[in-house]
Length: 161
Image 1: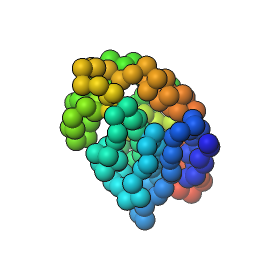
Image 2: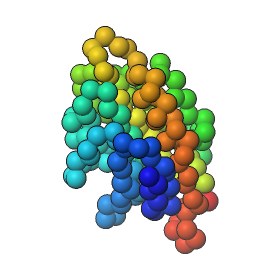
Image 3: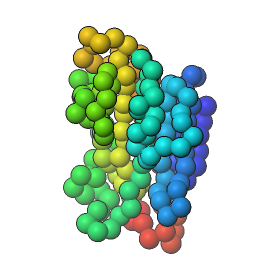
Image 4: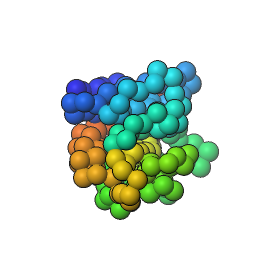
């Protein structure tokens, strides 16, 4: 399934659901998961990550607004999306917005086509003993990340690009 809105395009594999939305006065955000996503949630999916069943995966891509010290392509946002490592060892309980049992996460800040973003990945382990996501979880997330296309900001948007 392809989702395309607000200059963000992503391809989700079978069994995934997702949406791209923009709150009033906000910036675009993508939520995608291997489970039924709640209709109402925070931008980083605090409700979704609570509801994750064992073996589930969840992805957030949210755009940040330049200004007040945030410059696309500089500092925290200097990397590109293609520089992101989906090494299973980078998933960690400390990578979560809110620590929850059995969940591991990682975040990556980057700039693509003059637009600053954070991508946030969360997996819920199948079993208690595993310290890393299952290979199938990592492979699916990597496929989704590699499918993301971000267009340049529209002229007159006040964004660098």
